[in-house]
Amino acid sequence: MPARSGAQLSRKLGLKKQRLLVAERPQSPPDGAHTPCPKEPRLELPKTLAPQRSVYFSSSKGHPPRLGSDFFNQPAVPLAQAFLGQVLVRRLSDGTELRGRIVETEAYLGPEDEAAHSRGGRQTPRNRGMFMKPGTLYVYLIYGMYFCMNVSSQGDGACVLLRALEPLGGLETMRQLRSAHRKGSARALKDRELCSGPSKLCQALAIDKSFDQRDLAEDKAVWLEQGPPGPREPAVVAAARVGIGYAGEWVQKPLRFYIQGSPWVSVVDRAAERGTQA
Image 1: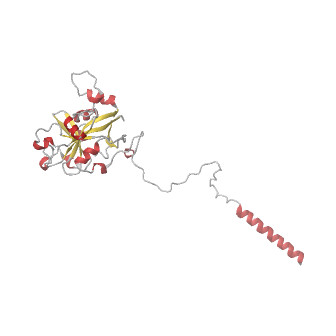
Image 2: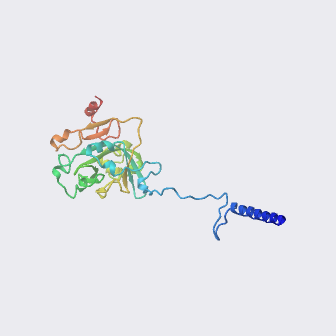
Image 3: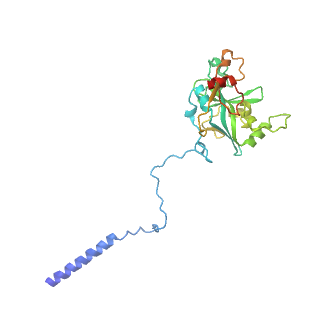
């Protein structure tokens, strides 16, 4: 009996040891399952699946993202000032991008402003963009041949006129577009002449009436990007607007804004600059 009991105990210990070895061995995969080898990378799902942003709202080629609706949703005067230093981008049908830093703007305050196309609160098919949501383009024709581009702001009938850009990219294309509108002159335009005025700006960027009422926050052919920060905050001059001699007391109101010292500005007001320095 003692010898048999010892044999049974030995057998039990052997079975227990075998069960432990089996338990420690890696489990075999189900039939047909792939077992990754040690050197094979293992893909893991991201912890959060964030929505993907449109290419038009993300940086490309090292450029910052475009400015959205919140930027435009402010009154005309602060919006006109906020535009200074931002980069206007125009993408042509062949993919060419024309870029320019905004250096001069004018604010138009709406129905009370005798120089605004919306004075008196009148709405017409021509000026409808001025009464649409902030960021809507208002493009109109002057002298039967030149276009000007405005952007609506907070307040019915209020907007900002873009007057001048510092060209940053696509200058040769800008030169060709501007030259196509010049008659009887073979002289090559200097860089500072490309966008130094509201109609020149539109010619250089191929902006016409087809852009009227487009949303600058969402359009695929024209948008605004945040400008790169400079070494210091530029001095901004507040001066009288240009070409509104019919507007009575509004003629002299300081609602034109430009970056002081910029060679790209359309009209320099020395008296206003002296006031800025004081």
